[in-house]
Image (cartoon, rainbow, N blue to C red):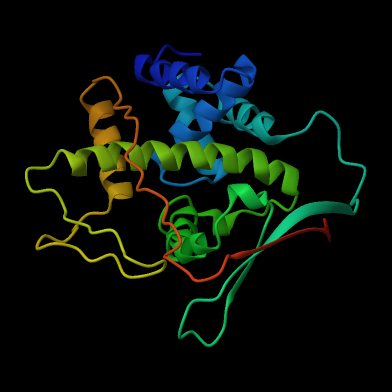
Length: 247
């Protein structure tokens, strides 16, 4: 493989943060996440077409190498039904007609019903995985196990962009004044300055700029916002453990 210092820097970063996976797995995740950012797509064809000339390999060789990241050693025998342990969380706030009932695979002591208020963030995640980012809507992959492996690479690429973009925003001369909501799901009010460029796009621009300028790729620790907590309530929130069928 042609020597690309910036790419090998990213491969080492992925391997360091995922010490339990094999070297080929780390290489595959790094190639996918790096390629998705530069191609601005998770399309196998688009990523392979970009990486092949960059690394001095044929298109078909690179395409098969990328496919090896999510292909299993043996074909699946077929669909098997399985049970999934789950927790039903409930919260009914004062003056609200209906409660929140949220089903999760987290244990009761590890979950909080008010996290449902972050559903707007989840919608942003859908946007970035589809038309606003990795173009997942164009995939024809229908094997959940293979999709799971590819989503790992997408998660790494997304976190890389958000951590770099978020750090740049935090270091800005006039940082955003985003106040924490007082109750779950409330609108986050901003100060006088509005965000004109999202941190996803900002991170992408900074990484590409580093590549074009032959600089070390920016890798930041990230600045995630704290998880919201339940407001003061008169009674306890409901958490019921159970098992349900799943595929």
